Amino acid sequence: MKGELIENRVIVWNIEDSRKLFSNGYYGKPIGIPKPKIEEIDAPLILDLIESLYLLENKKITISKLKQKITVQQMIEICKKEHHDFDKKYLVYKNFRDKGYIINPGIKFGCDFAVYEKGPGIDHAPFLIQVYNRSEPITSTGIVLAGRLATTVRKQFILAIPKGKDNVDFLALDWWKA
Picture 1 (cartoon, rainbow, N blue to C red):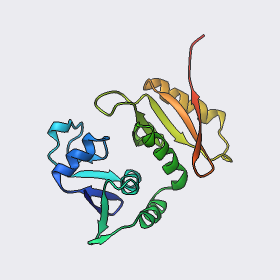
Picture 2 (cartoon, helix red, strand yellow):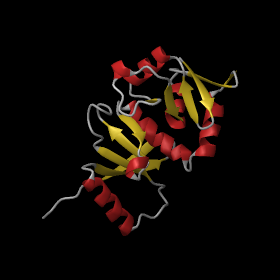
Picture 3 (cartoon, rainbow, N blue to C red):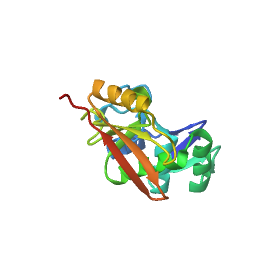
């Protein structure tokens, strides 16, 4: 399957490839289809940089720009220019994907990622993930804001704290009434 890097996105132009990528892991978003169902996909697929790198590393797609193939290392450099703390965010993304979760950008929830157990449109994302550096202070106000957001949308808020090159510690916040 082939993708084309255009600015800060990768487009899979082939409709059949788009359908396959979306149906095998809910990668990307079909252009112009807000709540896609697999059988309705008849448009190119737009992938964000993090999931594009994951697919490239796992040899599920090739990526080119101006007809030149992009290597994994080149893609990492592109991602680093676009994402603050890219290495840490990618480690968290990869951790969830490798465990079989579906992980999407969490921008509409004000966090780094929204994580699904089955997939968008099948279940609601039960987890919101915010990636923190080990040395970064977490304020009590920040925790309260995160908790209020998560409970408002009925999700569990998880702090993901990368540890070294391959490990991530997770701290889940649950809110309950006494």
